[in-house]
Amino acid sequence: MAKKKKEETKRVEDEILSDFAAFEKQQAESADLPTAEEPVKIRISADKLKAVAIVLSPVEAAKEVTKEDLIAALKSQGVVYGIDEAAIDEIFQYGSFGVDVPVAKGKEPSDGVSAKIDFKFDISGEKKVELKIDEHGNVDHKAINLIKSIEEGEVLALKIPAVKGETGMTVTGATLPAKEGKDIPLPAGENVKVSEDGLTLTAEISGQPIYKDGKVSVSPVYVVKGDVSYATGNINFKGTVTIEGGVQSDFVVNATDDIEVHGNIEKAYLEAGGDVRVRGGLYGQSEGKISAGGSVTIRSIESGIVEAGKNIIITQSSRYSTLIAGEDIILNNVKGSIVGGKATAGRTIDVTNLGSQSFTETAVEVGVNPKIKEMQVSLEEKIKENRQHLEKALHSIKTLKEMQSQGSLPPDKVELMKKLVPAAHQLKNAIEADTAKLNFIHEKLKSMQAGRLKINKTIFPNVKITTIGATMTVRKEINHSSFYEQNEQIIVGPY
Image (cartoon, rainbow, N blue to C red; front, side):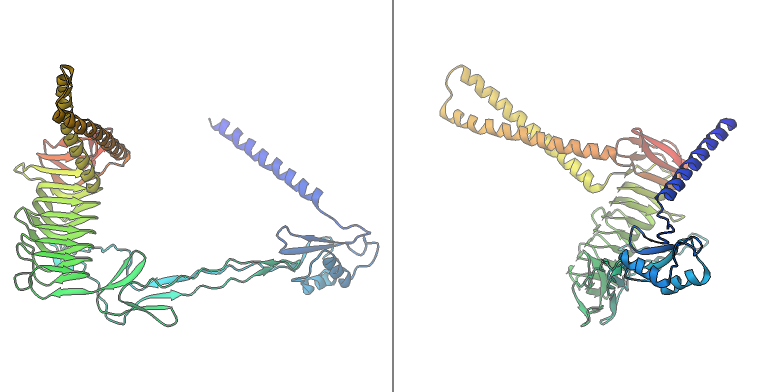
């Protein structure tokens, strides 16, 4: 094997050397060398940004060559820009005969630089939670990332202006165009002000800076000094809501941006277009609900419902609750657990403990985006309902046709047939269309990467795991592991 590899290496080396020799030969043959009669030769590079001269030595030349002769030769070849007279002088002063000497140099175009926006706040939309855990595993719940607030007049963004490009020039005097830097306006949204020079974006009001749909806006922040209660009534606010207390039962808080709650939430309903952050917990009595277009960060959930377009981050525990996250559910502090209820995540569930020692029935579903799952269930129910209607319609049509075979139908039955037959066709078409949609979703789900359930410590018996194409009920305790679908089966792997 070693000998064969050595021979192959030698063969490749020989090919490279052979190709290189051919290349050198081609260069030599194509070189336009000076002769005794024409002792000066000018070569211009393909990009016309350089001209070189080769001058025959006085011994070999049939006539004397001067600096003026060389410059005249350059001009005869059209070289009019970037002539380096110092380099020409050196040829004759130091005897650089018979070699290529660069004697003219063009100017490359300098492309412009497009304008840029320097944002003075984080526009990623990812509001990371950095929790401090002590040596005993206790979490400082006050360390949850708070709403970023700014004051009126604070700078939100600066525009770095575009830099114009500079044209270039070939040695033959042709202009080389440069790419111009593109200008962009400041991304001004609501409640912001653009400076007269168009370079600075500042806040017109105090509030929360938001970057959405390519625009910078300042969202007003509505602050509730205590609880949301009968003293405040329900809250419906276009912006961000900060509640310095809790939310009492049966009250509603609706915000187009973020909601932050410093206390606990009872059997209430919260809906935010952005994120929801709760320092306390949700004690929902099976009805309290939090719905967020972004992520939800909360200490604990007891008999509640939490839906998030992105992530659900729980810093302590979830018991007998419904959790639905478009992306991940994370509950991985040292004492964290999900017990009872159902947790659904589009990508990953990462939890310390799942289920309980008393074998509490707990369900988790990973790898299926809740919105897609909802579409799938809705289509299945619609198809089922339409099939039932179709079955009834076809049965009635069959009965009427049997009556017709025994004689003419009464006028009212004829009118009924005129309604039933088109209705049956419409139902068939609807079933076919919805079935095609359902099949499309099934195929897409099959092609998706399976989600993953990660257990940092223990998963207990009577936990039911569902993926896109498989289910599994845990029968015994399993420690430090992960669960994922492979070949329509759920596989247990390392954490």
